[in-house]
Length: 131
Figure 1 (cartoon, rainbow, N blue to C red):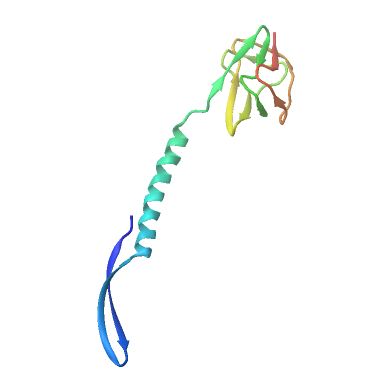
Figure 2 (figure 1 turned 30 degrees about the vertical axis):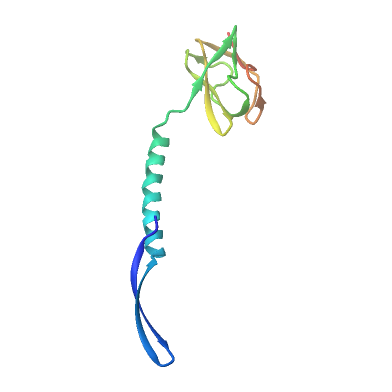
């Protein structure tokens, strides 16, 4: 939206003084208005991001907790010997700039961790073995 403001100018041409009133774009007012709009929009977006839960997925075949999708392991949340319950976050992976919690599909004890932080995994790749 362009804001028009009336401005008065005094112009001298060949020793004659003319007074003009024209409408001009008020760039400063426009910039201030856009700044207010953007600030209010950014606060709404940041509130939405804070209230959005982290996605979580669990896939299991037998004793393996598997990666639900391809990505990079950002953190391992369990260690060998841990007794965990169904739904426990065993790892966090990053895929397409989204962090995904990988949860255990069942109760069990961590027998082996097959990946380390920073590893790249493929969809359905085993990452933790439970007993």
